[in-house]
Image (tube, rainbow, N blue to C red; front, side):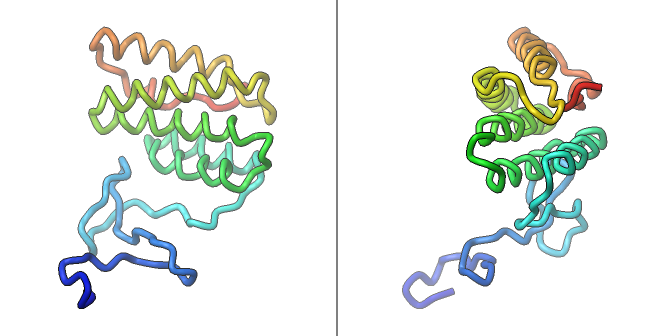
Length: 164
């Protein structure tokens, strides 16, 4: 704490002074108390090829870890070529939409899945065998189920990112 702001909470910072959150997280990405066992964090400096990104994110989705898949996809969005930013942002938002379903937040899920659909459709045909048409159709089915206040089966939270 500082003298200027005695009630301020000290935040974890990296070597450049940027805020980082070192708290462990549960399988849905929610912060846990310090010292709690949690799911292994995705490194802040993750920089993979598009193929490696998709494989890693798919493994996480298959394991029911949509929040962590979002972090992998977000790294590709931030580190990839500018021309592909909308694609990777849409995929990251898709994973966050699934995370909101896992957390029991249908309103947040609708918002993020709608944004994901918009970005994936606006991007057009996707490289790396990404199944944009399949993902947008899947998101629309989930959105319809959410609008009807229907339960989303766990299997629907594990979409295939690429064409089989």
